Amino acid sequence: MLQQPILTVENLKTSFKGIERGKQVKAVDDVSITLYPGEIVGLVGESGCGKSTLGRSIVGLEKPDSGKIILGGVDLGCLSGPRLRKARRAIQYVFQDPYASLNERQTVAETIREALLIGGLSSRADQEKRVNALLDQVGLAAVFKERYTRELSGGQRQRVAIARSLAVEPRVLICDEPVSALDLSIRAQVMNLFLSLQKDLGVACLFIAHDLALVRQAASRVYVMYLGKLVEYGPSEAVYDTPSHPYTQLLLASAPDADPSRERARVVPLIVGEIPSPTNPPSGCRFRTRCPLAVEQCASALPPHLELSPAHASACHFAGDLHMRKKLATEQPAPHVLPAVGTARLVTTQL
Image (tube, rainbow, N blue to C red; front, side, top):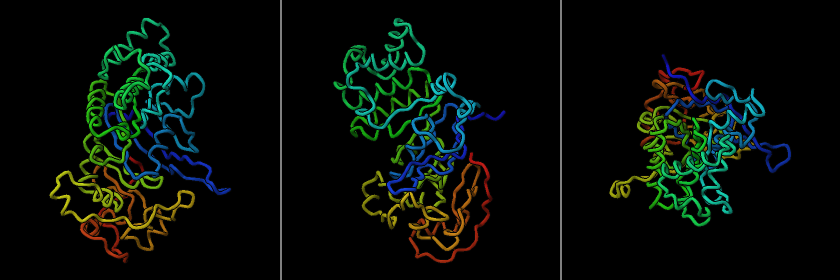
């Protein structure tokens, strides 16, 4: 029997009012993702592509314009009042900035107890036991309980934020770049702690990041996002080893190499041009204005998701053309007419 997803997002759209009258910022535009119990899924893309808005829409911090968010087989859009609040306890959020996400006027114990109280644990004795257990889980001594969060370092604050998110025993965690605001010296410690807790507790996690190496280390599957749309998704090995969308290839090629000698010899390809305005995105493929392989077809038709291998798909008209993919990986040719797609087939649903 196939495992059922714990979280399914179908055709989600979230927009905001633009600065110009009558204009809308299409932050998330027809995005569908799935998350299975106990797995970590990465969501990557450059700043401003809509990653955080997607995460915030899933937990209810932003109101989507349309689409479905299905948690454990229940459509959250069909719930309201106490039923919705109870269901949403199963999805928790770890914010990027631990300095902004915690109330500096509260102690560590008060911060975690507040989450427990909202979650329905009203007994003070039970709250104290749970606070102690959570602090022990995230590697903080009991002495930290009565300290104010403003007295803690960045790494300690993020440990408190993780403890708070785990307080109500969620089934899904949305982690919005949880270590990017931390110093490099403690980033690995917090990341290792997070991965250990995720494995022990079996919580499914959507890991939002722009650190490609970190996502490859942590995630079993990866979604790549550009200007509000998904351009590629699949198992980490497939996306990283055989990227099929020009944006994914250029994004990976721009990441620095850990080996200094290879890094010095590496020729870094540049993605030409600026990101188009989200209030007036390009027709057809969103990436075509910066793509070295763009042709007229890219402007006239929105590329469908083409499946290249099991669970690996790309929204590019030429994703199935191995010759073009290899050529893009080694050089940046001028735009010209390309042959038709090879053996790729159309996918109507995202995996």
